[in-house]
Length: 261
Image (cartoon, rainbow, N blue to C red; front, side):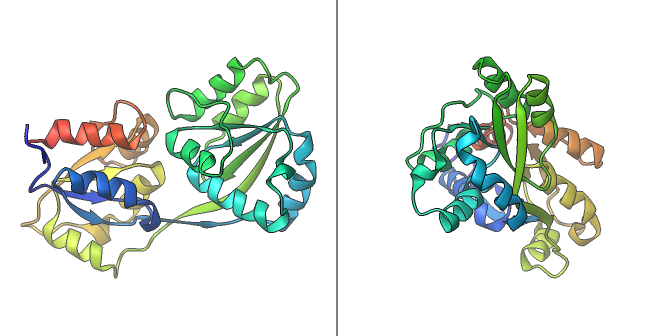
């Protein structure tokens, strides 16, 4: 196979604009032309009243649970604003849903003590339960506005005491007057990658603003995992290929397998 198996292929990314650098670089290294179509935007969203309840209790939590790298970023922005010493975290243990989230934690010179082999909410809950430390343990789950309830539900079923702290929100990005959207409508692509349910839903919601010209290439649609695929199908979008596991590397591998030369 060529060293650049995606040479001549046009790939559309649908993540928030400030989260595309890693995936963009991976695809460019494989020879792809990359078009960024930010269907969602992520911003900090945290209430001072919530922080006032959670931060004084940090010494009483057994686990600090992160479900995304965005959660790590915005949680520690607020933590550093309030505290001037990382030791204010106390003896809390840290759990992360996947590799990108774990990297965001280790970049802060903190240890991740629980990370499932598969980056899903269900797997994270099972990994935490497998530690045998949850009976009446107190957990703080850091979330966004669209996090699934399954993680908290499973932890509570395991007799854990769970508090949640929202620190960011994910919203649809209106692309009606966006230059990248105009490029996509005119030329299309060979594939479009969905790395979250929110991006897939935003694409479906904005179908009129993203309708392809007659001569444009119709892209294959790739999904990062089962939950995103479920959202895609429910929204009427095709799922032409799916990552074997919910990670960017696996999504790229599935893309190369489908389109690679």
